[in-house]
Amino acid sequence: MTPPIDRRTLLAGTLASATLATPALAQSFPLPQGFERFPIWPGKAPGGERVTVQEVESLRRPDSGPDDGVFAHVVTPTLTLLRPAKPNGAAILLIPGGGYTRVAIGHEGYNIARHFAQAGYACFSLLYRLPADGWAAGAEAPLQDAQRALRLIRALAPREKFDANRIGVMGFSAGGHLAAWLTSRSPQDSYRPVDSADREPIKAAIAAYMYPVIQMEGAFVHQGSRTQLLGPNPTAERMQAYSLDRHVSAETPPIFLAHALDDKAVPPENSLAMLAALRAKGVASECHLFENGGHGFGLVAPPAAPAPWPDLFMAFAKRHGL
Image (tube, rainbow, N blue to C red; front, side, top):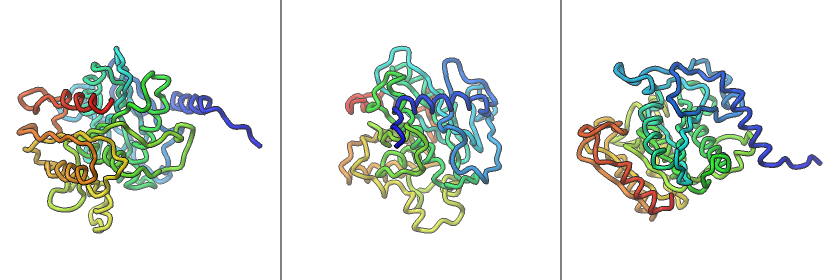
C-alpha cells in the first residue's frame, strides 16, 4: 500500500510547478511594481488539445498606461498577487470583466488590488480562459479557472498569513457573472483534481458582483457575453442554466451588489434580478444603485465615478467577518 503524501509536500510541489512554468507566461507589458504572477495549474490548463489561439496583451484604450492592459485568448490562466503592507488577515479574489472576449486585468485587477491592499487585504487578480477559444470544457473553462483559483488561494493562506475562511470574491461585468457562477450556486466540481490544493472547498466568506452580467435570457441580457459563452443560438434550456438569478442556493454567502442606473451596456436589471433571487432565498445582501457611472466604472475618479463604493463594500465586509 502506498503511504499517504503529506498535504504540505503536495502543495509545495504545486507551487514549485507554478514557479517553473513562470518563464513560459505570455506577457507583453511588465508587471506593475509590487505584483507577483504565477500560473494556477501545474503544467498546461486542462482540455487544451485543440486550442490554437495565441495569448496576447494589449492596452485597454489607446490612451491607457502600460499597466492598463487587457488579455485576449488566454492560454495560461494566472493569479497576480499584491501583498498588503499591513495585513488584516483576509484576502480577495478579483475577477475582471471583458465580455468573455478579453480580461481587463489592469482596470479591474491591478487598480482595484492597489486600493484593497492599502486596506490590508491580500489581493489576487485572476486571468482566466475564455469560452470561445476551443477549450474542451467550452463554456465551463472560465469556471474551471475560477474554482481552481479560489482553492489555490485557500491553500496559500498559511504561507501568505491570512485566514482561509476570510476570503472574498469580487467580480466585474462578465467577471461578475463568473463570480456569481463561482459563489451563488451550489458548488459542483468542474474539473478533475490535479493536486492537494483541490482538496480545498469551493467556498468564499462573501462576494461582490459589480455591474454584473447575471441573466442570459430576456430583455436585459448582455448579448456579447451570451454569444461568447453560449454561442449565437443557445437553447432556452442553456440560457436558463447560465442565468444565475435562477440558481441561488442555500450555500450562497452574503452578497454585495453595485450598479449604475445609466449603464447602457449591462442594464441594472441584472443586479435587481439577482437581488430579488437572494432575498427570496434569505441570503444576506446589499445593493447600491448609483445615479451615474455608466458601465465599467471601476475606480474611475469622480465625477465620472459613482459614490465611493469600496467604502460601502468594506463596511459590508466588516459586518460579515471579512
